[in-house]
Image (cartoon, rainbow, N blue to C red; front, side, top):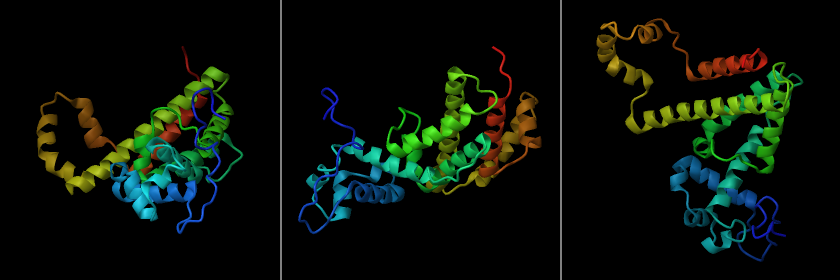
Length: 239
């Protein structure tokens, strides 16, 4: 039954009845095939027509399972969340969050298109809700979280870090592929210019960061920033 004039979400609609057809379909099979295409070609390379051809069916048959491209993306995203939900369970709140967030990074690096769909409205598929529940429940047990407003802010801070960090890392990977120049090559090319600018003395704090700062790799940076955020959640926050 629809909610007013809105149809049921794709996760609540039953699968179409099997038909006598050479190629059996299911939403899981459609999502898995769409993910393979997006992994290889990005979201811009994914279309209903291309997906139907890969499945060996006519495009119109897919609309028995998904009403539009938006629903297809919803299924793909929730399939990724299913893998995040496989993160090892822990009794401690901090260990739980570390496992979930690091698992999210691992899966996002395998499916780079996933980050393009993060940061807007929340994902509400069953697996996304399971990950959200695990994350919020763990944060609710943190020492610095004393009520619903603290929990909302903690969830928001963690999500903001996660989206920003993943987008930055994956954007750098894409840039390296498209330009054929990784971070080290880029730094080497601009090194003389940056040295001249820092030698002017106008940017002393930037100079300290460049010269004295530790050059951590992406995984180390991600982990240390995550730990810093979790430590901040447990500490005192003056108004």
